[in-house]
Amino acid sequence: MRIAAIVFCAALLSSLDCAQGAQAADAAFKSWLESLWPQAQALGISRATFAAATRDLEPDLSLPELVIPGRPEHAGPGQPEFVLTPADYLKESTIESLAAQGRKVYEQYRSQLGAIEREFGVSAAVVLAIFGRETDYGRAHDAHDAIRVLATQAYYGKRAEKFRGEFLLALKMLDDGVIKRAEVKSSWAGAMGLTQLLPSEYYKYAVDFDGDGKADIWHSVPDSLASAAKQLVDKGWQRDLRWAYEVHAPADVDCTIGVPENTRPLGEWLKSGFVLAYGRVLSAPERAEEASLLQPAGLYGPAFLATKNYFVIKEYNFSDLYVLFVGHLSDRIAEPRPFETPWGKVAQLPTRDLVRMQEILTARGLYHDKIDGKAGMKTRSALGDYQKKNNLKVDCWPTAALLAHMETGGH
Image (cartoon, rainbow, N blue to C red; front, side, top):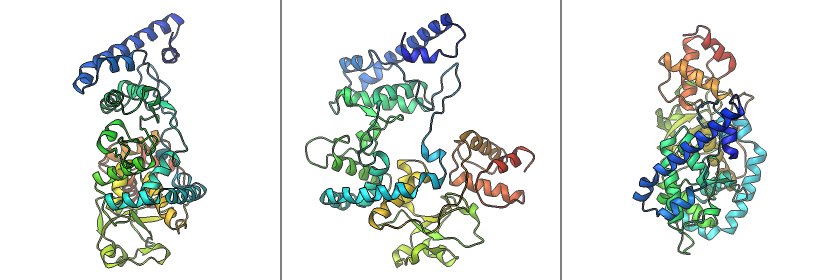
């Protein structure tokens, strides 16, 4: 009996039911794998590669975010960007340690980073910050079998269609000789290499920057950093534009205006009472740049004016905290000082409670985005609108007390 199948059956009532259920689940997965052969063949993958990769493949049912018939959803630890408070995610000790190491890596690859800046227009500090956040500058190693992860996510995952394509492209990577089967390691979500690319991203963005004839995102730091830069450029990165500016908001700031669609030139934000941290002074071109207000912890922490490049980094990982981490780390590599405003003490609600909040806000016409259990900019703004309508303190931060109010008769 295969271990994965035994885990799948743990909740069944009898050993006979378990055995039958395991065999059925195993057979269904094997049948599904074989059904992918025509699509693999269409991508030019050889039958030998397909057979070798799928012959003894089993799903990894320990992965988070799977939807498996007959058992409760296994949420797992989740991505820290979505389950930690800003203060916990952006710990000063972590940022300072990574910034110090980033400066060492910069010195080691100074000439290559300069060439990446010139070619792609992405600062060395930004690609180094992505490198640091994703794999601790290569010191953290992926532990999962990427082929198994992608197959599991394609069969049991919430985004099965997306991962089916990623699984097939991972097989193509094997067939193309990009990497050997035993070396295809990934995160639990299937991203690979020093700066964490999915197979589709490898084929779009991987760059041979060290000139050895192959784009090696697993072992070559120049290739990995150039690949990250190319991905940012493809998503709209603008040369010579900061990711964001820390500001002090006016005391009477309306936190509901902090949504991506509400943009103004930086100069107009400053005229309306926002003050740049650390006495920064903007040039005339900077004052003309469009920006959105970002308050990651509602009223309880630093505020930022986020430029277009902020949202480009967000395409790399759809989390405000991820972008803040990468952006701030990039600043700290070049200029070692923390945010001028400290983070306040706030608690992070469980994902299920945030989902419930989004459902209620949607039903009341205050929220018009996807229900994902994440307290992003649009969710926080909608919470502020709810607080306004119900004569509550408007701080745009989700709390258990606010959810209780919403559950018991607010409007």
